Length: 183
Image 1: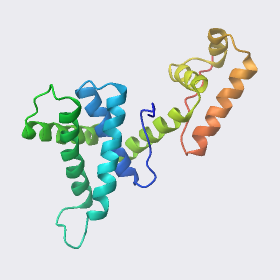
Image 2 (image 1 turned 90 degrees about the horizontal axis):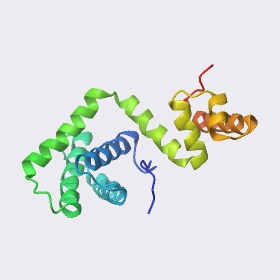
Image 3 (image 1 turned 120 degrees about the vertical axis):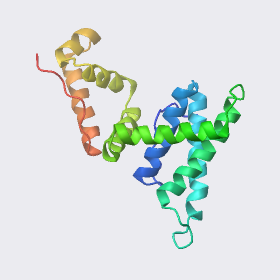
């Protein structure tokens, strides 16, 4: 089983990937899911979307595609939580409301492009080696390259080349990597 926290499914567009990611992360936080359960949620939502997406017919369906997908994933989320956490008594109306709330609050707090950038950044981060992830964490915390060298005990050239590689990886995806602070 994968241990990454975000997966980008190439068969889905940015909206669909964003919705899977937001629902997965929000459900994991709300229902205190462990890493394996969170990954199961992500995979089941992706399978649901993969199965339901071809069934949408803009000629006969009266709702917008985004609404159709949201409702499909909402129903699936409820079933997943009931299966993973049978100890939680879920009222379908309350659960549906909470998922609507999750989606709406995500829309209120971030624009779609910011959410997509955040998801893509997380995907790129998860593809980095553990050493590169540690450097990204340190850069994000505001450390300079010299501070990372002192803290890690690695030679300056090693840290500098890793930072350059990280920048290159993020840049190849159209993203900005965290920058080293000047000190």
